[in-house]
Image (cartoon, rainbow, N blue to C red; front, top):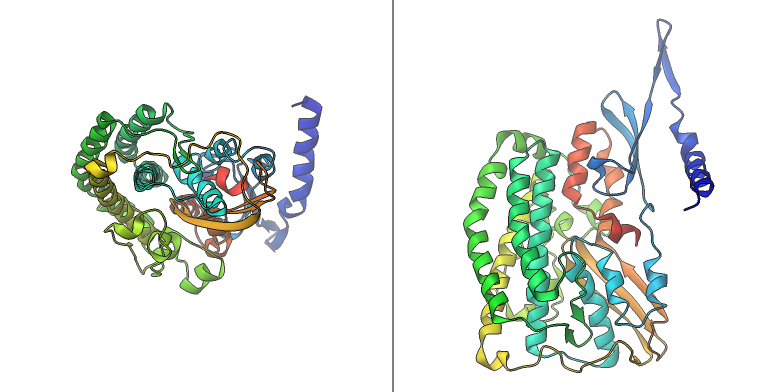
Length: 401
């Protein structure tokens, strides 16, 4: 970017917020001025979990008001998707929630299939479930490590990232990439899973089952962690619903809502798993829901592995109709939603009958969840607000799009 243009943008951003950044005198005590302090955290700050700016109004260490400023990662992804074919546009979704690329690939493919009247084979659906649940495990492990760092613990972070590396190794063998994967495609998936990789999945699940009690032992039962999490960041149930919250935010408030059960897609209705729910609706409740989700994803992966090992499934194709990178989709419009690691993630697609979508609109669960943040941060301590934000588990690539 041109240096002068960059400086102009920085000046305009400052002028946009300068009115609220002025620290006004609120009272005088014996000739000493007492001011409320406006503090700008970010957009480059380790505690904001991405390129997010928090404008924080403080009285000492107590939050009086907080304003999240988003948009620093905006890349016009919806507009770009409208200039690409349906297959080309899948790699755009990888760059939204880049921690959960598999979950981002899925909705646009489901939307195309609904418009085109395509139903993938059971093997293709099972491979999709395997991919998105392994991605959910990797995402939750990353979050576990980060929330540990937010509360001052380093060892859990190292343990979690070591376990996550096993999932990324599996993805690398399956897809050839570790982060942006572009695996799920209209009518199926890009590649079948070799027996050797399926064995790696089984070995990883055995390892993770053995390690989960250790993860709880070092963090869940830690008295310092409990003190930072319990009775902090309470979200009233009605407030969560009114803001359109979803995912672990909603389930930690006692609402048993998960699209994999409420509105099943793929083969989720054939699988045995529970929807974790807590009622305290505080930091600890959100943490416990996340950890229970991790265990339920392990159960799902174990069941899907058995399905893929069934001889009648093994002979099926991993792709129903071998669509190329360019194909026409019948006229129509559809909205598809899935249960992503950070809540309800949806896509609205309008087709005018050609090879590129006429309109694409994404619905981010993390965006709706973040909108709650200013409401529940009032009268909290600054250090607690950092942990509250951590329990929201946001990814700015999904929020800004």
